[in-house]
Image (cartoon, rainbow, N blue to C red; front, side):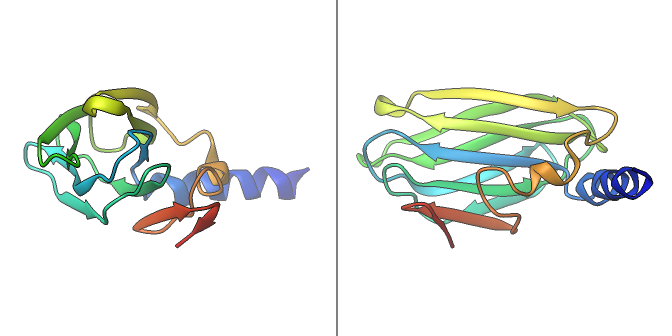
Length: 143
């Protein structure tokens, strides 16, 4: 029992270092290009590869000050889109947000962010995609 508790606590500590996982799911039925995740206004921008229909990618971001997280992409017609996926985050926040891009460039957002600690521990790393700086899943395989 003590070993399991130590394993969980270790996972909380390690996961806390990664910040917020942002998953982008392409359910639009068309190619999404020039995808990036930006921590506004002073944070980094994280570029992802293009996503074909039914693919998804993931990136971990670090909030800087009181920030919000935006996903930017260009649809198949060349129209740029910007969507807010997390309206308020701060340094030390941990968790996951997900942007599902739907037909017409609309987006559905979900978030599970903690201001205190990463209660999901190691589970956040074995969720929908692998824990890499970015990853893409094609036909059930992570690249």
